[in-house]
Length: 116
Image 1 (cartoon, one colour):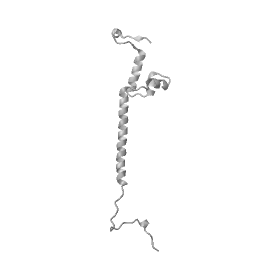
Image 2 (tube, rainbow, N blue to C red; image 1 turned 30 degrees about the vertical axis):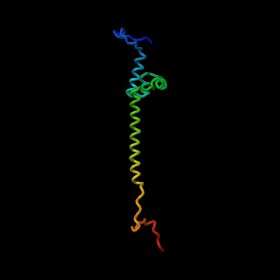
Image 3 (cartoon, rainbow, N blue to C red; image 1 turned 180 degrees about the vertical axis):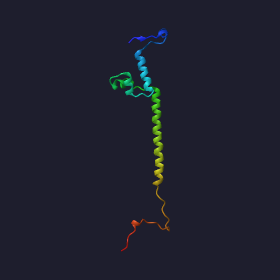
Image 4 (cartoon, rainbow, N blue to C red; image 1 turned 45 degrees about the horizontal axis):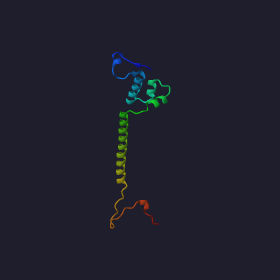
């Protein structure tokens, strides 16, 4: 596909831009903005999502950082919840102190024997 020159831009020192480059750039920006592959497939007119996936599954640096931050947030939140649960359950599962030798102990009624 030939390069496209737009008026005074055709004499600019920048390299020529093909329409395909603009299309690819627009799709990459849409992906960065949060568009999913199915939306990109429809936008680009690809017959198969495999074509879209093979072309646009590369990840832009900002998206990588955002994904890493979100993953770290999920892991830290889960760790805090787990830690709080362990602390709570740990308090409930601690053994009770032994009664003093002279203190009468209460027994559950089902453990008492019925004399006949």
